[in-house]
Image (tube, rainbow, N blue to C red; front, side, top):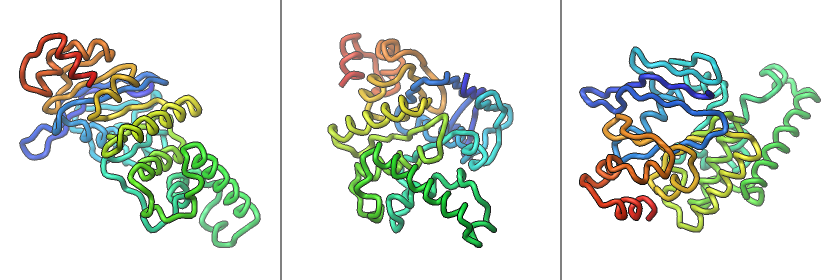
Length: 265
């Protein structure tokens, strides 16, 4: 088991954003997390990535190591990377520089060497730039390497956020609504890129997405949250037939044919 989350809870005042949630993800799996607005999906991501700390009793193991309560940079160093619902790119930096920021922890020289500027530092700089250019080519942004990131289109910014997360060389990549605001054509392109990255780098993926067709067509297992609690978990086929899921979204019972039509639409 690559990721084992047990009993994660998080309250904000009197509101239970996440309540006693368990999540086990196998290596190589694509896990979808769905639920209505306010169901706790992004809060769960923030707990896993260390942005928030779980309340007492919650534990998280990653790749066999207890990483509960580690700060975000330590969790990232273990191999967990993520994107955010609201893109957090450095608009004034170039596209390539954005990726180099994500790759920084893999730098093989220290501060003193960087100040002195030894041949080993220059060689390492060339290596990093070549590796990041290769990644940009893979996600289709190599032609924009020297462009300020703020000048990219919405779809290109999504790809850049994905590329920067990949620059950290993660074992587990968590995508928070990666297709938000994209046209159907760009959604398909993004998903194709994500799946290609998974195959090339042997990734495990967790995806939060409101476009249910994306989740149902790509994920091995789907976890459903409502009001901070896990109400269903299973294969896409099982989730499509689960009335609790439909009630969470629409607040009423539906016929089986309508259930399938809603989740596939």
